[in-house]
Image 1 (tube, rainbow, N blue to C red):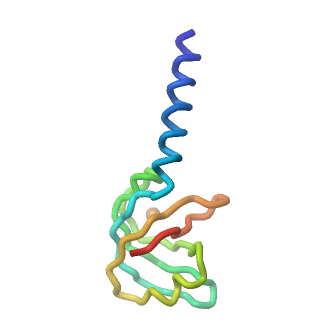
Image 2 (spheres, rainbow, N blue to C red):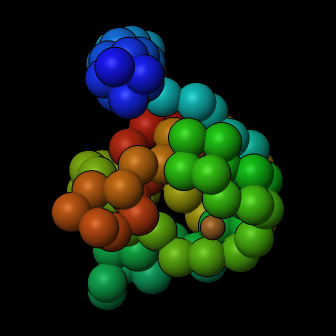
Image 3 (cartoon, rainbow, N blue to C red):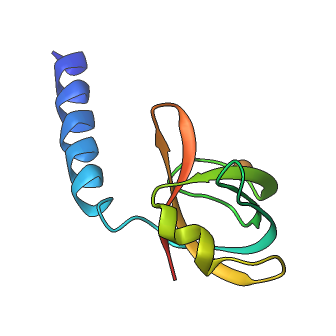
Length: 94
Ligand SMILES: [Cu+2]
């Protein structure tokens, strides 16, 4: 019974998270490198709370092609990252 309660609570929480997660959490980062060939960007990012990831430098894919043109090395950004089909992807930029 306790287990069912826990599962129900987890479900409610994850649904709530998914709904609020539509906007995503913006994280600060600095663009280290933009690679137009692969359409990927290297970002020195602060902690990604949605992904439970500490601050680090890593490569992200971009959800939309147009995002690449908005980015250049050395730029300060705020972005939302999501795991899409197992690949870490920038889904929003500002
Ligand atoms: Cu990372």
